[in-house]
Image 1 (spheres, rainbow, N blue to C red):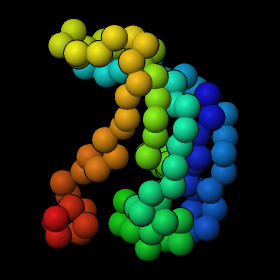
Image 2 (image 1 turned 90 degrees about the vertical axis):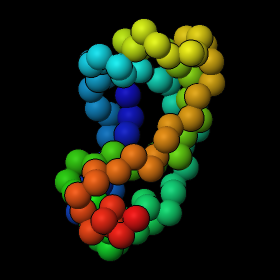
Image 3 (image 1 turned 135 degrees about the vertical axis):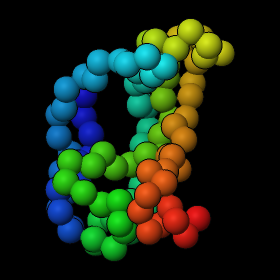
Image 4 (image 1 turned 120 degrees about the vertical axis):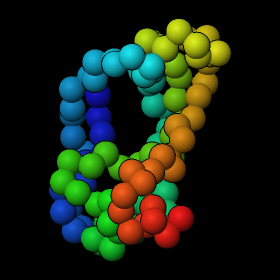
Length: 98
C-alpha cells in the first residue's frame, strides 16, 4: 500500500509500505481519497510538535472497511468510513494546550 511519509522538514515521500497486521480492536481500510489537513500543513515545514520521522500524513480520508478485529464495530465490511485524525498523544505541547 502507499503512504505519504514525513522524514524531516520539507521532506515527504509517497512510499510503498507494508500491509499492517491488525491488533485487537483495529480495522483495515482501503483509502479511496486522501487529503492534506491543517496539521499536515504544519508538520511539513517542521512547525508542529508531532512531526517525527516515518510519520504517516494525510489523515483526511474516505475509505472502505476491509477487515476488522473488533467484535463491537457497527460497520459492514463494504461500508464507507472516514478516519478520526484528531486522536492525540496527550503528552506534547499541542495536546496540553488543547
